[in-house]
Amino acid sequence: MWVYVLSGTLESREAELDMLWEAGASGLEERAGTLRAYFEAPSEVALDGEWVEEPERDWQADWKKDLRPVTAGRFTIAPSWLRGEVPAGQLPLLIDPGMAFGTGHHATTRLAVEALGELDLTGLKVLDVGSGSGVLALAAALGGAAEVLGVDIDPLTLPAAHENAELNGLTFEQGRFTTSGGTLRFEEGSLDPDADDAAEYDLLVANLYAELHDLLAGAYRAVLRPGSPLILTGILQEKVELVRGALAREAFTDVTERLDGEWALITARS
Ligand code: SAM
Image (cartoon, rainbow, N blue to C red; front, top):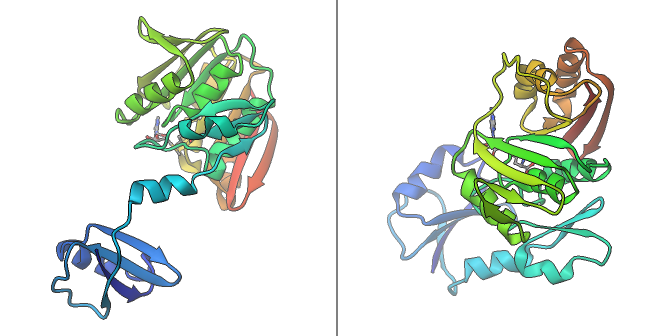
């Protein structure tokens, strides 16, 4: 395996990355202030780097080796091959990394799973907007919710969410998974910002981004029964005020926030 090593980072070299791909790079990596482009064989690259030959690596194995279970309140999120490492007393939430966002290694997923775990979910009807890997919908379902729907605009997330539900021992029948306390299903879709649907959900969780929460805040209010909890994340700290403003506009109450690094989670009540 040949590596073309340049000084700089993916960001500082952004304008030159296309040249590396066009020269036949099969992957790029940032490591200790250098940018490394991987090739099968040296080729013509008109940049200021140097070629280094390195032993072949099993990327899949290397990457799996570094993945650890993540504690999020009463849940431990782990890939299926580490299920044995979930501590006794913790609720296992098995998520295999794949094409869809949501392995638990991002602060926003962790914050949302933690917030879900603090609620008594028993018997609730729950909506997860932007379900990705299915991690939040699964946390709600495994935590005892009666009816959980995960929606995502990206159809590629649906097979990933289904695989993760199966990893957690849920069986699929007639378009939905069955849990010990209810059902769980995933659909391609979203919320209509102008929704005036019947208020039918007891809890809504969404890991999106601040501008989208601002746009959807009216729809969150429309689909939630009065007095129901709302959990929003995917919010950069500097965008917290935007989301707080949207929640005030829609008359949500009991607004709280918690932070993890540059990320925030906001809870409120409809
Ligand atoms: N819920 C998972 C988690 O917490 O880890 C995944 C969250 S990921 C940050 C956001 C997901 O929202 C992506 O899967 C994306 O496709 C989806 N998404 C983006 N815009 C959306 C929209 N308007 N409606 C529904 N889903 C959307």
